[in-house]
Length: 141
Ligand SMILES: [Zn+2]
Image (tube, rainbow, N blue to C red):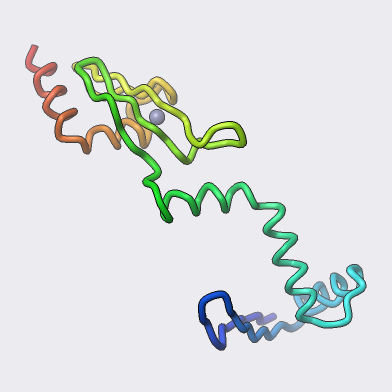
């Protein structure tokens, strides 16, 4: 079984795909085509893309937003006790992200959300110079 897709031409808003499929994949393709009652192979591809998009829409939207405009993690309000981290990957239909409280303890950064020292939030705050400074001060005490 071999399937390969190559993009012939790629311009903004325009994409041409040549697709060669054989065996089982080809059979599945034809069954889908038949099931959808479509006449053209290209229509099947279009239907599949739209179907997949509907199914995975939320995942795509979450993963796209940060790279387009905003970082996935952003910190604000750094103080002796902790840091608030806005995590945009934890967005849902109601909110665009979740604010995670990372506590700064003498033994290190502690994420209240995960209940962990090893999650991405704790790791993220350790990259903030101000936080490292606070933790160094606390370790000494
Ligand atoms: Zn966390």
